[in-house]
Length: 324
Ligand code: FES
Image (cartoon, rainbow, N blue to C red; front, side, top):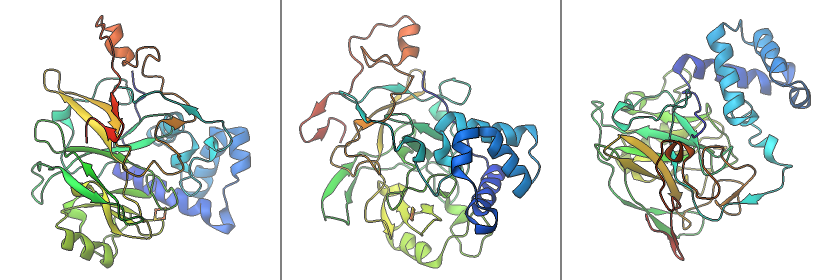
């Protein structure tokens, strides 16, 4: 079973952004070494002292992030810090993983809210590889069919194909939630649905004019924007780059929708797309997901339910994968 990562709700998003600001403020600087040594209690005490009281749900939110993705999401200014000193390990091929909620229950595609500004994340293909899952819609919050797109990599002018959305309306997409500029993660990089496509909105939706203009020119009803340094991505067109400083689109995770169960699977990535930031190869990382059986590559949930598929890996082709 895939490790579920909690949805980051709007109030929690605002809380997390305030927390990050305090962490960076020289007067209230967060002591990373102390955090690595003392763990979550240090974070709780720090948050209470510098942001405000932690009620049980806020405490659970912080705990969920720590359990789900380690320090990376909390300390988004210093991404993947807890992984940097670990040796890399490799996958043979991309595994199939059922996407589940924080309780371990499969997420049903038809129940993912359209244009939800709350952030729904999962990890793929390795632990720490946090990924957005979005159900995209139009200005009226009706699901929108996301067609295949050719995506340009501004860094080198190369292109690759984003295969489009999946689900009952072909509107569900998944992209790495690690900014391709310097690696900021949620909450600082997050989805701005159509209703937040204005300038002058309060935190956390303070979209700059340049991002808004770029989105209008690209006919993007909403964007993924990174508040760290202003990179903007178009999730309606393969998370292509709308504004820098990034010169690389967000890599996508190929989803598969089982129309019988309404479950969503993560099944691969495109080897022609940019790698997840910091990776030499998307098949390498620092820890395997606990959600799949290493010998078959099948989700444990599938095997435990009595099914015995012979092979759940996504077969790779030399030029990428079969789902381009
Ligand atoms: S890390 Fe996202 S814009 Fe710099």
